[in-house]
Structure formats: C-alpha cells, structure tokens
Amino acid sequence: MKRLVRRDLQTRVDVASPLLSRLFSARGVACASEVDHRLAHLLTPETLKGLPAAVDLLTNAIDHQARILIVGDFDADGATSCVLMMKGLKALGADHVDYLVPNRFEYGYGLTPEIVEVARGFDPTLIITVDNGISSVQGAEHARSLGIKLLITDHHLPGKELPPADAIVNPNQGGCDFASKNLAGVGVAFYVLSALRARLRESGWFERHGVAEPNLGDYLDLVALGTIADVVPLDYNNRILVQEGLRRIRSGKCRPGLLAMIDVAGLRREKILSRDLAFGIAPRLNAAGRLKDISLGIECLLADTHATASALADELDTLNKQRRDIEDEMRAQALDVNDESSWVSGKDAVGVCLFHNDWHQGVVGIVASRIKERVHRPVIAFARAGELELKGSARSITGLHVRDAIDSIAAQYPGLVTKFGGHAMAAGLSLAPDKLDQFARAFDTEARKRLSTQDLEEVVLSDGELDEPLTVQLVRVIEQAAPWGQGFTEPLFDGEFEVLEQRIVGGHHLKLRLARRGDPDPYDAIAFNHPGLIEGRYRRLAYRPMVNEYRGRESVQLVVVATDLTVD
Image 1: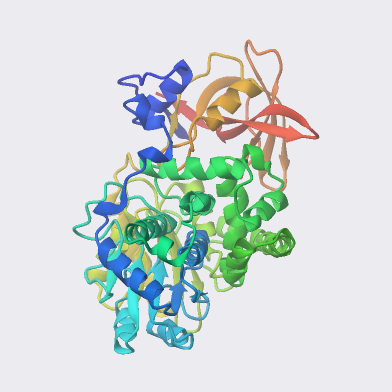
Image 2: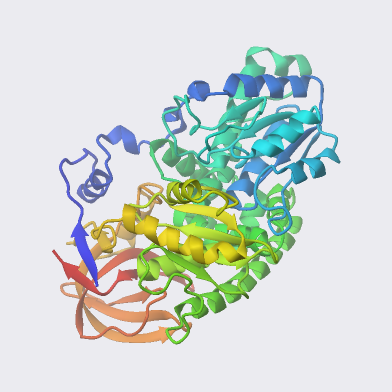
C-alpha cells in the first residue's frame, strides 16, 4: 500500500487562477515573479567560478584559430552539450572544432588517459569536456603532459581532488557562488558560451572580423532537451531555460534533428511539453549511447537538412525499439518471483543489488529505475563489462544520497570500488566480479544506516481533489502553466472513481474506463507497469490528467499513478 499525503499550503501565491495559485504555492513559489519565465530573469554568468579563465582559453583559441576538440558524454545531456558547444563556438568564430565521445563499452566514462590518447590523433590545442571531466584527474594529468590545454565544463559533484585543468567551470565545485547548483551539463555549456560572447562583444571582435553576433537563444531547444533529459531539479533558473526552449520548439525554431525526432515520436511540435522531451525524445537519443554510439544522436542534432536528420532519427527510433525489447526481458528476469538469482542482496534488502550474467550494460540504469519504482528501495543493477569488471547503475529514493553512500563504502573498504561518480538520485560505479557479494552487503548496511522506516514507506504526494470537471481546456492550462519536471513536479490529483472497465494491455499496462461522481462522461485511463487488475468497484486513485489526441479529436485521459492508497 502507498500512503496518500496531500500537499500542505502555508501561503497562496497571487496569480490569476486559484488552481494555479494552489499548484505553484505547493511547490514553494512565494511570489508571482517566480513564474515569470522570461529570459530577462535568467541568472547572469559572473558568479560562476572559473569562468574568466575559461573565456581566456576560448578567446585565445579563436584568435589563433587553434584546433578545439570537445570531449562529450554518452547520454542526452552529453549529446546536447556537445552539439551546443560545437554550434556555438563555430558561430562565435572558431573554425576548427571537432568532437569525440568515448564509446561506453570500450573506454567507460569521462576523460580517461586512454581517451586523451585517442584525442591526440585530432592534434588539438585545446580540449573542452562537456558534462564530464570533474573526476578525470589522471586524464587531465596526461593532457597536461602532452602540452594540451584543458577546459572542463561539468555539473557532477567533484571528488576530493580536482583535475589539474587550465580552467574548470562547474557550479558544484567548492567556492563557486553561482546561485543555481542544478544546471545540467548543457546549462553549464550555455553559460560558458554566453560569457564568451560577452567578452568578444566588449573587445569589438565581431566588428573587426565582420562576423554577425549570434543569438544564443537560438540554441535553447538543446538546453531544454538536455536539462529535462538529465532529470536535474527545475529550480527557477532551469525553468526559465526549459520554458524558453519549449517556446522556440513550439514555434519551429529548433534543430532539424529535433524536429525529425518529434515527428518519429508522433508528437505535436506546436504543443510540445517537458514530459514529451522526457519520455518521447530523450529515450531515442539515449538509445544510441546505450546500445551503439551516441555519435549517431549527435549527428542527428548537428544535421542541417531535414532529409539527413530524418534518416538519422529513423535509426535512433529503431535503436530505441531494440532498447525497449532488451529492457522488457531484463525487467522480467528481475521481477520473476520464481527466480531470485538476479537479486544478489536478497528480496528483503533495503539497499538492493541486482546482477544477471546476460544483462546489457547499456540498459541496467533503466532496469534499476524500474525496480526502484516497484519496491521503493535504492537499487543498483550490474552487468558484465568484460571478464574482470562489472558496471553498475544506481537509482535512489528520497533520503539516500546514493553517490555519498557509495563514497562511504569506498572509504570503508579500500579497493572494493574501482571508480564511481554521480548525483544524489543516480550514480554509476565499477568493481571486480568477485567483489559483488561484499559490495551488496555493504550497500545494504549503508542503506539501512541512512534510511528511516518513514523513508521506506512510499508516499504519494497529491495536490488534492479537483472540484471542477476535467475538460481539455483545463488540462491545457495546467500543462502549459510551467515546465513541470524534477523538483517542480507535474500536478498529481486524487479522487474517488468507479471502475467501469479494466484490462491488461501491452503485457504490463492497465487500461481503464473510470467514472467520477458529478462529471457528465467517463474517462479513459491507463496505469503503466501495473502488476494486475484492480479489486473492487470503487477506488481512490492518484492520477495526472493529460490531453490525448486521436484522429484529430482531443479528449482527457488520466494517467493513474497509484491504485493501492491508504489515506491519512
């Protein structure tokens, strides 16, 4: 059972709609200006530590037309960061810009010494990392030994030792006064380019070289996609970046590659929402990095023509279908009640470790997320990365900072974890196969130490009941009121419904027909990844309303989040 808790409203923000006032207030909005998402309210770059040194490196590289190599990451944030830096630097006058992304199956994550050796073949004067690098001490040392300048742009939490780079821009490094610590990698890249443009403008560079000053707002489609895909908290600054990006996408002012992926996903560009980026676009982009090579996604976003972009978007869609098939098989193995072989730590563990010899290392993060949602425990799923290494992907619950938990284990048991990194809610790590049982015991112990009984009780946080009928117009107002996402969650309501019809579709989704007292018509509804049919005719459900479009007709559909609720 899940405990239903309604959000506590201490104050009401003064906006025109009583419903929006209630929703915004419940998410910590104190005044109406905090839902004004115009670019004029964006934080300025000046307080980002390391920015002057970064701009010095970049202006010098542009002045001397030096070779610049961008080293990216193999997820959607890394891909959008790479494309943004490529496009932005070229628009700002850099003629020799290339990119390199480590293949996750050969080199692993970050600027390793091996990747620096590969980069050496590009003969770069300057390497710029995007969405990685803050933990790449050895790679930075190797770049320095080769005389290659290094600029690290990242947003991940730093370790005890910073890499010896020529400049580091990361809002989470010590001594950085930038007010928003939640920038994605693509957000950091956007701020670096903004500061570079300001320096070039002040120096008169554009006039001297007869170059038109670019509008960096034209790249906010990439910033919105990368920010939503990386599931960083949508604080006010990030909401501005995402909302402005969505506005440009809706008007058609975005990359041909993004438009092509929107078409392949069957989405309406002019009504695109942050949830569409999260569940429609990001998985297709990530599929390349999970199964093959994220360069396919990068090339799609770099494409200048619709024809090229469409062909690449079709390839990404095919990869995503393959990813779903692999994920379904892996999830079924993890959830098979008759086969607990994949549960390294046992079904009663608080910190859960999963492993199967046949699992795909590019998909373990998704499986960890799915199992976490089912058992409400922090989960790490492992796969083989060769005979001598396992790679794990962790997903956590509120109450356990999973990167800090792994850091604590690594400190207690030197040599147990070979490398790790990440955030509060997601992390990655590597260890030797013969260390898995020891690590699983240590992770369970650490989770029990850090999580309370209350943390382990799954709570459904509701915005309460809706007194008014659920019309398409009302749902559109809710959907477009703000960019909803991590830390600024999409509204969730609860109510008493009569279950008129129900059936399992797609193997593990529950399709419903629901009636609510006082409303003229019943609603279609779906509960994704639901374990079975609902018992009883009348149930209190937690749901999100959305607009469903079919053959030109719009109707309200309910996405049911919880059916087994206890009410305080």
